[in-house]
Length: 338
Image 1 (tube, rainbow, N blue to C red):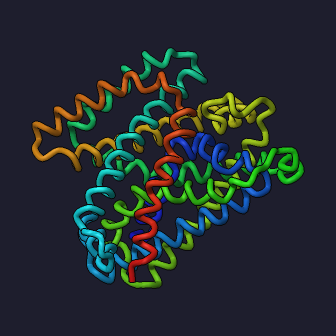
Image 2 (image 1 turned 45 degrees about the vertical axis):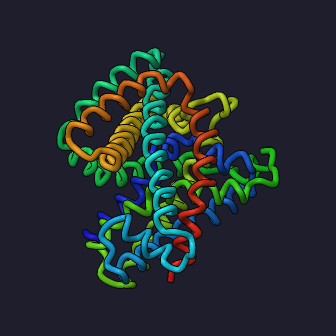
């Protein structure tokens, strides 16, 4: 069960609200037509290699925390370690708080799209909920991934079988451009920003290189299956996908009310677990005392109320590519590390 725990945590980090809602898949791959499939393959293999390389480094040097990993990764560079560590820690912290805000925007977008509830109302509810949860023991929130990921796998597989038809014929009609490769690399890059630090506690589940290979192989297979299924779901949408905040939820409604709300529940849980995880990581990194933790918690939860005004789609389309570019620094360090 140890390796499965590791796999579920890794998939849980990648399959956030943006992925499960279909918005990330649409923005980074679907819009590129058939080349988007090649982009998916490249992106998944790149993420897989980063996981493999990071786990090997962690095991080899017996790394216990992110700072230690940075020390090993930049050991052969002439640039001052402290400067790179400050830059990377800054990028990670900003990405965590941005992820928190994007997840909150996704939560509000869901209730606005499906139930016509004003985003301001749902954002106030979520702000209060997050504030109290973040001030309490949040271990229960993290363990939800162990239930959520298998459930997502079962439901997505079922919906995918029902929708996977004439995929390539439909894809011929989608406009394609030359930026598909850049998009694929940026997707992998920003996903590994937080993934690398999450892998460090995973070493207790990994005993040897065989375990590493098993973990990476299963993660790659699951990711490819998820990608294929969500893209096939997007093909069932007969209206302009660009105007839909959560296209996969919209697509699930084509198969009946029960699938619409069942998948909706999964999306909401995915959003909340990702939001809490991101906010908790951010608060832990920047808060030196319990008092400062509570004060910072109150500040970010207050500002969360106003974030949904910017729009879930806009936040994903604008901010994730930016962090994809910034995340390349970390990727290069990991690739260069021996």
